[in-house]
Amino acid sequence: MLEMINMYICLFMLLLGICEAATGEHDACPFTAQGFRSLRLLVDVNRRGFHRDLVYSVRHDNGLPADLRVLLIHKLPSGIYMDVYQLESLKKDAGLQVLLNSEVDLEAPAYWSPAFFAFVYPTSHPTMPWHLQAVVPFHGRYHRPSLSGKWEQLVIEPPKLLLKSDICKPLFSSLSHKVIEAPCTAKNYSFCTWIEFDNLQGPKAVTLDLPVGDLSLTLPVCGGTLAITVICSLYLSQTIWKYGTF
Image (cartoon, rainbow, N blue to C red; front, top):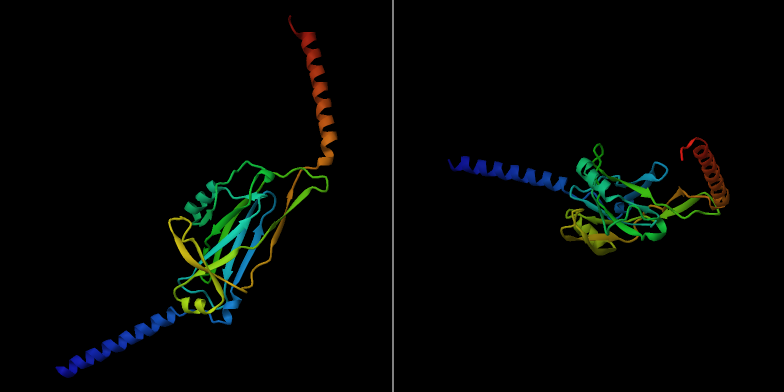
């Protein structure tokens, strides 16, 4: 009987060790101090015209930790805006997680609008688990007409990349970094401690051209409009005088 109990105890300990080993292997940080530098943040712009998308991607060749959370803090110029109502709709329909630091006037022109910050929380790509992505729509604002050309060039600087992972916390602590307090989620209920790493290669700035009015056409447009208005007014006056009953 005693031998039977000892056998069950040994079997239980063996199974426990196998489970712990499997769990530890699954939860192991896929980064190394050297390989961590290959973590890539990509920022691109899709579509043309006044209505476009900012596409954010975070990737690593060896995969990403299971508990990795990413926050992108992006300062955006006054020449564009993000529609909070559209973001809320995409949050319900597609799970997009974006938080803006201030209210956005959707109708204000670029020269009356300030720059603003967007807090973007990328989520797992549906077909590539090692790939975090967020596609955020934005829109161009009205700009003053220009004499120099028909386009206004905007420069969108790259965002800050902040990370949070308990699995990789020992590795993160050993690297050169800054500690930043920022909203934990797009719901903005509380703040969490995030880590921003120094010397991590980031994306280049993105430039885009928005069409603007041609100021050199002011005189012909105004003159043509005035001439058509006068001609139509004279024609209507003549018709009323000829066929009208007074």
